[in-house]
Length: 153
Image (cartoon, rainbow, N blue to C red):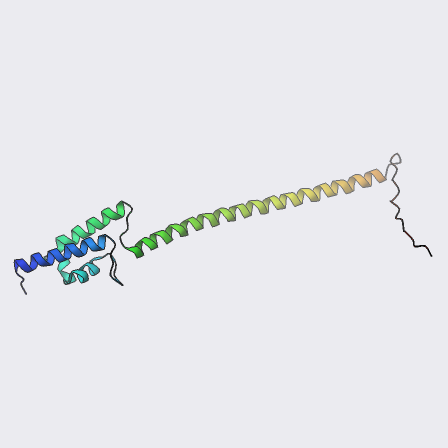
């Protein structure tokens, strides 16, 4: 079915208006910043945006403007912005987790080394005590006496 030039101009104006709304972030409920939503908002058949159809140049313009916004760091679709934010947060959390795991590994290694050093020092102390007990020049101090405090009867 052919449309008149006036109808085509009216459709293009509706498409451009819908394009501007979507690129400003004004999404309809359940819509995204895509050709399907653009076609629904402009009340135009989606197939008219593809191939050699009459509004293919507007699809190209829409995609170019959308990419330009995304390149500038602006994401008009709030869901896409949320996804991007959550992905970035997920990456930060993964980095923190990796750092925490590395720190835990370092601390476990330090604990293992400290325990090994303590065990070696203990063995050295035991060896020195045994060596000191075998010589006659070293006398052992008497064990401390425990005093019992008695009660008067």
